[in-house]
Length: 386
Image 1: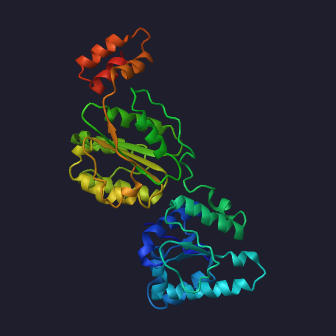
Image 2: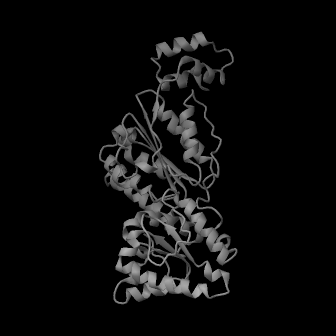
């Protein structure tokens, strides 16, 4: 994790209890993406400053006077912890002072958000604490940014644009899809590329010769057409020439290729670490997952769990076998698995007519029979190269 600078004053400071750390961390990252590096206080990011004696006094200063907006994360856990009680003393003093102030901005400088069940002593029944447990991190970041804009008008746009996902399309993009059917894959992929989505992983399962590789290549071609989107495709079937596959993967990712000679999972980890340093919108596509070998452990235990917090990252995995979503910590960010089946002859005919005016349905039906519905053969036969 890159070192964050210590500012004279934070724009936003989060006060939270440990059990809600994962939820609040994702929100804090989305807010920092909006406002800029080093503008948000989240305790574990500043361990180097808090370590040692007097940490309680340092925290009280941050929440009391050294932040423009203090975000109070409400839950019973918050009320039960000695450290959060120390933080809350400074926040309560700030709230008490604000009640007597004529400056409306001071009254807006504490924002309570509900992140768990239970209440915090001293929070009045008339206090509205928006429940953010069912909202995306991007939506909560928007809420916090809007509140900050009331305190310091123009600050959020001056710091960093107006979107938590600045380079993801605001609505599903129109995709080029020159293939037979598989419209479900097209629609799911377009949704995956949209800003602010909660589901960031698209699994595609299909038997051999159902068109998985053709689909993933088409996905990459579409992603390359989106400005400022880093993207790459890795086919585990090609790991007999690992250097070539790795170089193809990083070509449009904007990170250096890892040093040759190490294990595949270690190389992929290095690439992900480089992407985390940039934290810009990124799409990773993996094909032929059943041949992932040792890299499957890295994907299921490192890459996919990282999607919970990485709003900038999207992943597609295709194969006859896929990571098991049931009970996985990352299941909430996974789209339903797309099950591919071979398109019927009528849909291959519609595809072929785009390239050959004299094509007949009878010819396509015979081609499907002779090719045993193998997508790779039919795409070559009926596509532009016919």
